[in-house]
Amino acid sequence: MNIGIVTGASSGLGRTFVRQLSGQEALDEIWVIARREERLHALEAQVETPLRCIPLDLTERTSFQALETLLKAEQPDVRVLINAAGFGKIGAWKDISMADCDGMIDLNCRAAVDMTQLVLPYMGKGSRVLEICSTAAFQPFPYLGVYAASKAFLYRYSRALRAELRGTGVSVTAVCPYWVKDTEFISKAQKTQNSGYIRHFPLASSEENVVRHALADAKLGLAVSTPGPVCTVHRVAAKFLPSELMMGVWALLRRI
Image (cartoon, rainbow, N blue to C red; front, side, top):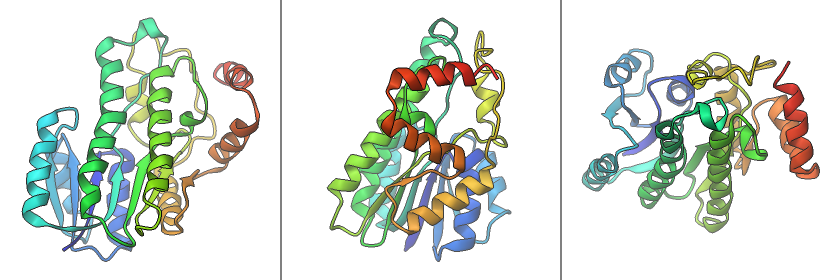
């Protein structure tokens, strides 16, 4: 059985990945994973590919035990794994709770690694892993510090894993979008004691464009997908400019 697996599938980029996968890939099933079961079932009416709705909270270690049991029972051929579960918070260190800091690290880092480690034995030649990182991975971001650091971790993990898998036929793509305007990410990120350090989100991308470019880049076997002009320029600039200078530029841009 050829399947795709998408985490964070109940909303945002994860949900859009499911929709576009259904239209592009010859899959017997897509396993959709998220906490909100009702949203997963609502997605069934929007796609042609059969969905297996798996309501799991990936911050809970027992979720991976349940998924491991399911994989062992079904023995699927996983053609695509998309780790889209994650969240961020905007604010100074004093404005973000310890629970939110821990949650970002747990979901954005540990859960993505655990999911990848668990699923890789069921992937073969031609399979693709998409780790949804962020353009925030390319430099330190004051007032988005923990989120950016968590995405830098996932970006570096993705690049290293890709090198380890060379010769297996399994590709890994780190997807690094800029702000996405039509998901719940920004509104949730602003729910802190003070999110006014970032006032506007100019030139934000749309989720449809981000997902379309990310899937195309992964099919091409690219190591990094920067689905949009802003994140592409950012990636190039971060290769040549010192972090201190990049943070200075950010200090100006975030006040726009």
